[in-house]
Length: 151
Figure 1 (cartoon, rainbow, N blue to C red):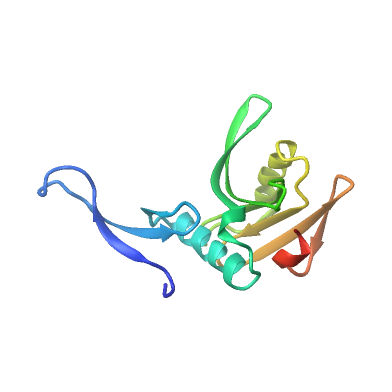
Figure 2: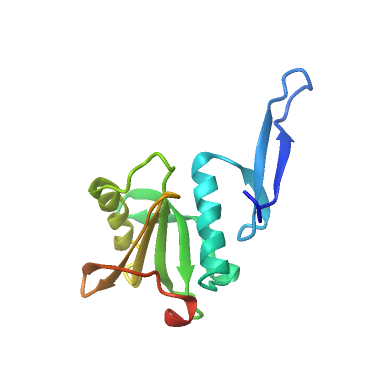
């Protein structure tokens, strides 16, 4: 995982009971977080959005709380435009989790909380799928739009 800042960290406790873990630096949250399988995919996706498609870190939110009806969710990544409107919802899954229709359906409920979002991106480190939302319909697109196209 080059291009990423990774460090070893010890969990709280005595040296005898301390558990050594790896942490990765999240440039959006500006802190080190536990390097879980899902966090690995999340950081790769953030890196791709920033370095390839030029999405600024300042327009990304990570693990944002979202209330839909009486349920609470955490979205992996939300992208806001310069007006602070959510324009893209990104859901990251562990590499072993296939991007099936049931995974897609799970994420679609987030749109009830972010009605103005125009794009949905699913990523698992092997596959990335993007949909554009138009007139309450989800249309799969071949390419993820660069930042300049979603301002």
